[in-house]
Length: 374
Image (cartoon, helix red, strand yellow):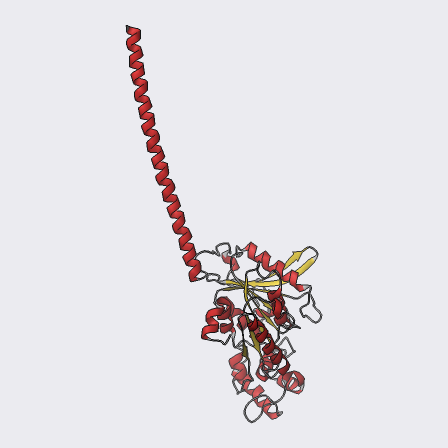
């Protein structure tokens, strides 16, 4: 009897334990189901938020947190090594949040260091005035600027061998600073203008997330059939040959439903303070003296415009040295020379449309609708 009673008690105990375990299992399953539902709901909301953010523009999805603070707010010179190649570069990261990566290609007789003033981490930089206005405007507007020197260091123009070097530099910096998902834009001058058109026509344009390019004082001759992104041309109408090629390029691009437009840099009227207003390092006195000297040798007409191409005259350089202060007046190394070339407006870099260009890079469709004819 004792054994039988014990058996019944143990059976009853076991049954109660089974019911308790079953109840616990049901509770655990319900908790897991609720947790899973909550996580999926949270994930759905996150994805929805990201999609909304993407539809609004480049805001919350991408982060530039991988850019160290010491990298920001100053030009940094670096020679990258790719196999046996040594590639001269300068980068300038904005203090504010990055909108995208802007590659800049110099013209012939120039290099990567022309775009920034000398700084502790770029002592070789010397910053010609038009170049630095463009680069500083871009940085202030949130673009991470990258400049590269062409492989040709004799004529300092761009050639076919430069494409892979520039792609290597852009991929290196995008990966190093976590900018792989950020858009890229490109701006080039003269030889560099045709080179950024080549970059736009390349098969790597998509992987670089190349969004738009600006071609200055050059055309995209021979490349328009392969370009599938918006193009802004900036040229000088006095150069009638380039102007004609630009018109042809725009028509070809538009015929393929590619956004394309052009703006011009026209001749500028000179005044006694023209140089001092254009170049911070030039004093009002020096500017006035150079203006009066140019008038005295017949280089300024009755309307106040340059009557002769400064590139073709050595007389004004020899006479201006007395007032030029620290400017060497050496072609392609002188801000005074550069600004006078721009004023004559046949073939020189110009910064007048920098903000418009950046607007075009950020939102080509909106800029075309509101500010340009595309």
